[in-house]
Image (tube, rainbow, N blue to C red; front, side, top):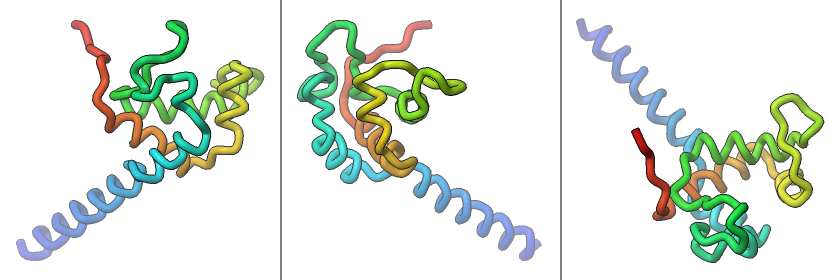
Length: 117
């Protein structure tokens, strides 16, 4: 019984550590959004873009943001890529860690997104 309990504790600890690593760093994400001037298009609060066709990013699901940035980085000619000249240029230099950090930051912001059933 003690071995099972010890194994369970180790497993939970490993899962928690992995979750913390995969989550992204909010402060680093904020610094990156400042560096790449994301607010100039998506709005200073990331919820009021300068053009209605630009997405609201504040409060968006983190996994969606990671997927979208990765797709922009791949480009429109790649499998599962997205074609947008502005976003492709912005996303191209980002590392996987940068994308996780940006997504964590944007997800942490209060937003007006709602889910409907």
